[in-house]
Image 1 (cartoon, rainbow, N blue to C red):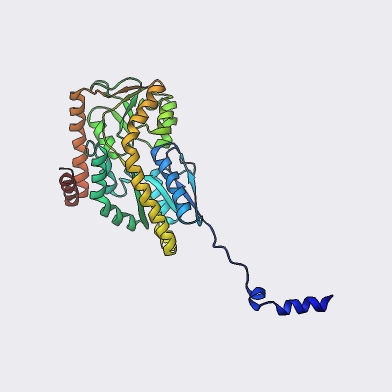
Image 2: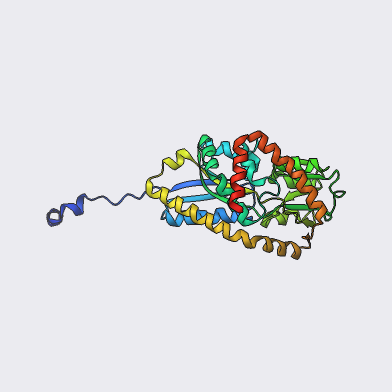
Length: 332
């Protein structure tokens, strides 16, 4: 019985015996941080991006999302976390990084970019500058993602300067703090992840925010009025650690780049309908949305916002003036 079996094996082609099974390429697992909810426009954008990366890499790259600062990191912490390799990539609200790099305060300068077209023009104006700054921090820009226009969440409509006097209001960066302090409010810069506990404790009375998606759902637990002052359309940036990026083979770099480009295009499209969707959800949940804001209040807010713009230009220097002039040319 043994000899026929040996003979049969000897007659098999050598390739049939010697060829090992194909080696499967290892899966690359990434964690992606975001301090905002999964149902925010940015959380949904992250998931859209993650799905595309998985598809375009043919399953080689899998992204696990960490929303609501579940890893303990706020936006202000994420630049360093990505730079050091603690995180491979993150979705960062960049205004929180203004004390590190002043260019990150550009998108939230008050009343500078308040429409989708303006927000996109402002990003394109500063894109090369973002690339330079991010490279200094060992990371690469994948795509930007705009926020809907910012308003004021409070317990009553904000329709006059008197309603802002001494109001304890959460702001999301230095620009807002300068603006609302100038107008007589009592602003405090607080990350979104820390805003809800401060509201629950009565430390603050109002919140500067768009209240997009799940963020709004949390705010209306405490504040049932939203005044659409159209203050700014801030920006978040999705970045990747440069060492992680450079370690990818070209085919996977192309897959990630293609996914990022598609996500950027998607985010600029959906932002156009997001405002009305948010307002419908707010009203359905008994939030009073005030869109007819008195002109004198807007004029006073814009005058106060000019202080933030001038403070930013003073800090950045001549390059700041050139960026603003370039932006003005783009929108006119």
